Amino acid sequence: MSNKKISELTPKAIPGSADLLPIVDVGVEPYASKKTTVSGLADALSSLIDFSGIVGYTGPTGVTGAAGATGAQGLQGIAGLNGPGGPTGPIGPTGPTGATGVQGATGVYGSTGATGPQGSSGASGLSGPTGPIGATGPAGVTGPSGLTGPTGPTGVTGATGPSGLTGPTGPTGVTGATGVTGVTGPTGPTGLTGPTGPTGATGVIGVTGPTGPTGLTGPTGATGVTGATGPSGLTGLTGPAGPTGATGPVGPAGNDGNSITILGVISSWPPATAGSAAVGDLWLAVTPVPAGAPAGTVAGDGIMWSGSAWINIGQIRGPAGPSGPQGATGVGATGPQGPTGPASPAGNSWTRLTTSNFVSNSFTATSGGQYYFAPDDTTSLISRTIADPPSPAQGAYYLVWNQGDPIITLVGGTAVRSGQIVARIFDPSMSGWFNRVLVDTNSVGSDYEFSVSFNGSAPNAVTSLPAGWSASISSNDVTITHTVGKQVKDVTYWGYTASSALWHARYPTASNELTTTNAGKTTAFTIRISNTVVSCDSGGTARIVCFF
Image 1 (cartoon, rainbow, N blue to C red):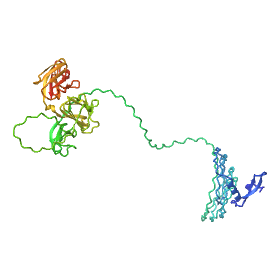
Image 2: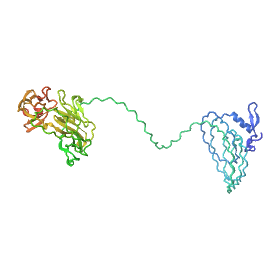
Image 3: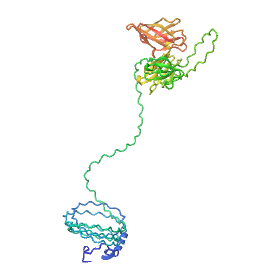
């Protein structure tokens, strides 16, 4: 063997476990050539090599060499049995990539020889270590394609023999000419499948080479799906309250509301005038309450047409007044006992207003509320305002009954005069809140008149007083002493202007009040007037009408 190259030795496809291999012993110098068996070499490799090492870095990528010519395909060896898996060897460094060889010319295909019978498989040998990759030889010239020979019958699959050690890769031989393709023979029967051998150990991973140059920028990808909305941020802290704005100017006085027209009592629903009802038309419900009347209606309630709907404005009566004086005993025989009359309907409760109800001279009513004012020696609602309920619904209302104050002012500048019961009603079709006078006792109470003449703007004489009355003047205050025996409820001034030949109605105001003293409230009252307050000519005359 010493006079031959390894490549010149006769090949053995599947070496046996007892076959000999040459080795060089480097343990003792001079190195000596020795031998070992295939199985001995496999055992030594399994015990000496530790395959669990750290993966090394990949080396730099070498320049791609020119493609070499394809060599002739060697005969396929018989597959041996898979040997037991050996331990993983350490990762060796990746060698540099050789230059690509020049592409050789395609050779002529040689003819395919007949397929020989398949021999029996030998026993599986141990897997030997992978040898180093040899240098790629130059590509041979490709021969012309030969004719395909007939396919022989497939032989019976023999038992798989042991895998032999992998020898070093020999140089690529010159590709022979391709033979003419022979006629395809009939397919032989499939041979028996041999048992599968165990999986061999994974080869060592080479060191990672340096990063190559950056490639060209690819096209822009499609827009991704929009992500889900993130959670809402925390609510910021409430800022400090701003300064109170300046009080706006007083708005112009509103027009007086239209009066209520009481049409009578209603015992069936809808009323006969339903198709032609005017705003303010009112019917009184009696017992039994007619079916179909607004919800919650009881006997004694007023049902009024607001312009778009019939609404229940509550009981048309106030709380009981003070007892009158005892009348003289009648003369004559006592009459028979009359039958028991029907039960009086339960009245809605009224809330008495005093100055304690007003904050910053304002009181906010509630929908459905009924409020009255009965003056005494400590209360007066002059210069105070009743505000409408906030966020009203269609048909919302409240009632205000003035039992003696000269004027109770509602929001918007409208007024409830002494002796009046006013319904304040909400209807969006009529631009919101509006007033309806339900009761005005001035129209049925006692009234008296007298005249005041002026010297310039100040009063200087009182004439035409009722019998038993007297008057005194101090600057702009005129005090009247009377014999009515009740507290005055209201006063109206009628001033005359010669230039227009008209009489003008005016009333007491917050700065020009109608007042009484506590001790003399049923015998005297004082009015503060000027020719401007009563709207008459300078040096002119006004008529004063008093209501009790």
